[in-house]
Structures are given as C-alpha cells and as structure tokens.
Length: 330
Image 1 (cartoon, one colour):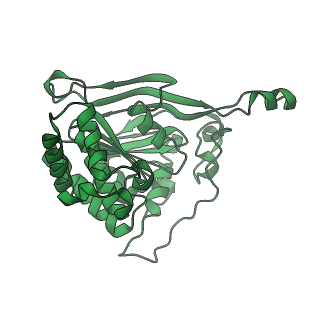
Image 2 (image 1 turned 90 degrees about the vertical axis):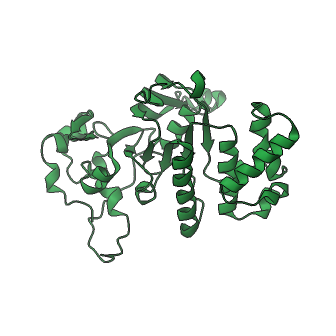
Image 3 (image 1 turned 120 degrees about the horizontal axis):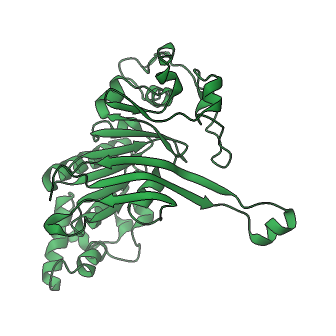
C-alpha cells in the first residue's frame, strides 16, 4: 500500500438531477424537462490520514459530493477512485449523517445498531465476540457498556451522534465521510464531538471527508479546505492558508461571518442578495450578482481554477489583480 497514493480521488465529477414536473403536467402546460446541476466538474484528492473539508452555504452541492463518494448517488459525469485498503482489499468507506435522530433506527437497541455491520461483514464470529466488540466501540466513543441495551430515544443528541460514530467504526473503515455531523448539536456538544473525532483520527489512522457550512467548525479539523458555491469549487487551500489569506470574495464573505471575541463590534462589509437559483444560474461567474468586484468579464465568462501559491482559486478579479480592492475578512 503506497502512502503517497491518495485514498480518494474525485476527477471532474458532475451530478444532474431531473426536477421536471410530472409528465402529464408538462404535456398540459407545455413545459419542458428541467434539470439542475448540483455538482459541476468538481475535482480534488484526499491524502491518507488527512481531513479534507468542503464548506459552503446550503444548496451549494457539498452534501451531494458526500453522497457521490459513498455511492448513494451515481455520477452524471467524471470519475471517483479509491486507493488500496489494508491488506490489499478495497478501501472501506462509511458515512456519519447530519441528524443522529433520524439516522438511527428507533425500534432497535443501540447494541443491535452497532452490531449490524459487524454481523453483515462477518468481522467477528459468535455473539459473545460481537457483544464484546460492541462494548469496545461504545467505550471508544465515550459511552458505557450497558448503553447497548438502550434505545436511541434514551440518549441526548450528542450521545446519539456518538452512537452513530460507533456504528460507522464497526465496519473498520479507513475513510469516513462526515456530512455536517455537528450541525444538529449545541455548540458545547459540537466541541466534544469534534475533539472525539480528532482523537479517533489519531488513534485509528482515519481519513475524513468533512462536509460543513461553518468554517469555524472545520478550522481545527482540516488539513485542506475547499469552498463550494453553486456546485463548483471556487477556492481550495491548506486550512491555515485559507484563514490567513483568503483569495476568493466568497471565501472572504464566509470568513467575515465568523464571530471574533477580540473584535465583537468590528465593521464588516455587508453582501447583498441571496444565492441564485441552481435551476437558472447566472452567466459567467455564478457569484457575480453578489460580488463587489464583478465586472463585465465576470458577468460573461466562467473563470477557471488556477494556482496562487498553495491556493487554487476560480476568480477573474484575483487573476487580474483586482482582489486587493476588497477588504479582507475580519
């Protein structure tokens, strides 16, 4: 197994969804079929043992990327490749979902929820070994052995997410796809879950693909951060580089929304408008209706990703050296 080979490579992946009205409605009303491109030619790679985060507003396509990687959706175009797993077997991928209340079967006891992948994949033989493994996993995520006999509704939100993590670990994965795993939790509980995930990454050598709408959540988790807007990656950089020197105006907008305890009353440049509809995206750069630096070229031509040091950015203003006109976040 080559440590230099990425555990995950996503190459020019796109995903379209048919959002047309029912056939009869289209015939009676004379409407054509309608498609929305939720993900548009996205490319990135994730090194083993790292955390690659995708951030952006709701509807930008980041959760669709997570479902494409886990095989819940098929790609409309492009390819997804996995590296070699332990012992030459395929890489094992598991997903941690956003809402632990809806992702756990309310009719099953926690022990059965965690044991199901162990049984299905035949990772242990005999019920005694399976029970011992379940108790080991519960201890790993900070729960007690007798919690195996409880139902999900008997736990708090943070405890339920710990159960979800234990279930994901039960199949002994190497890559965990985390779709906003803390967004349904209180802020204090979010920190506990993030600290748990960092510890598990160090102890088990896990690789994370982490999806979030909150840059402050992913800052201390991530090695690399990709910022998505309306289906495309608009900036990708090492985490600290992105926070210290954001290039794209949208990245600066996201960073400007993070509260600063050292400057709680700092003045921030307000950005007008809502994200355009993905059913009818604007021509050129899709961020141009909200961008203070947009010019005629931005409204006409789609920018390509290009390198600025360690950063990849998709912006005409950065390419032309006009991005300095916009004050940095914070």
